[in-house]
Length: 527
Image (cartoon, rainbow, N blue to C red; front, side, top):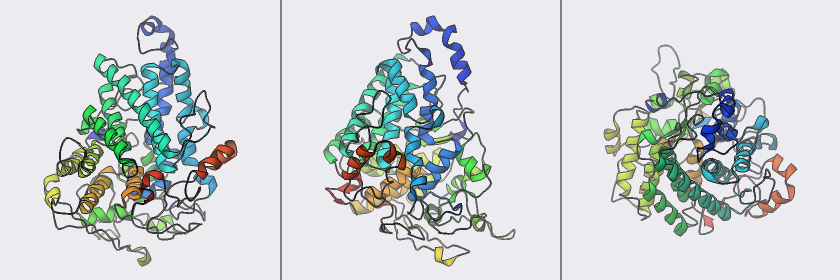
């Protein structure tokens, strides 16, 4: 992974930040981006933690537990529990972890403790506040993609136990805040100022990179709501592209960690040594069928015995009563064979290309054709992982996604519904083209599962393998699979009236199988 080993930033401890408060007092008083209370910079590391969830426990909960819905990972360990995310019957005690983490966590972690502090010290104005707003929009767009209605426009003054916005109101408000953040960060980029360079683990304070990141986020958000709010979505998508989105792997966003935490994927897949995470059978099967050379960069290999050839075999998700040790030799995430300092991906440049491909397919002005951006997305992904052979892969018009054959348990086998080939076919229907775009976007997006799960709910692609055991109550359609996360137990305990009102905004109520607004088209199920 060429990109992963580049751009390691300087580690700056909280003590260094604090120690500089009086030493550089006069300098900071002349810096137009720096409030008089210097420690505002010290709140950004915890907010940045929410982008990739690098700490091991949040990584386990947010990047592996519910991430099985995106078809990338399987968490085979049940810890003797009868309720799991993967079997679509998670209990309230575990369900609370994901969204609660994004809002707040013990010790000042999470998004809002830092955001409130920045808001207070800056009076809600200026560069620092708008950078905090960018991080807030990124994280809250994740929450909106996970559960639907959320407290957003009324959050202020240290209080997020407030009224929930309906989904459309929240998404539009996030776009407004994102636009304001982009304008401020763009001004800083033009001036050449880098006020956050000492604590920015992603771009080292490079505001020109943050502008591309923000515009790519805007494009992602526009596509998310494009089926149900098409005119507004087109406007926002075209604005994002015109302003400049990611186009090179140098634009891709990683949490470079800088010693703050070990790589969370490494910790849960290797550091704990308990088979916490395995590659999901779905993505492995797709890539096996395509003979995708990125497999060696994504997964470890399965070896049945010393004499057997190495293969890529994932674990099917949702196996009730799974014994993790039975699957210890199955393919894991490549992170277990890398290193605890390996940066964690946040957003790849390839995503921007695939988003533009889908936008062009819709007839939006994306600056090129759907085919051009589709092929660019594949090339960017190959380059991101340092893999050769992109042109041959793009030209292949015969290979199709593979099936999953479990060498131990035949009941885990899956026949893949997808027959989509790789090569672009201008004569194909728009629906066939959409499947190509979303399938290759999904493969290129590994291991960021929320985008894959969101695209599946929005478009029906890729054809994610249903869990082996569907234990949902009330029953979730096994093919459509889980549609959202319920509001957390903590939300009901601390904000009951507002949460109950939010549940009433959802047709179907606060259930895992309830459709979210953006996953519909004209008020109906998309697929």
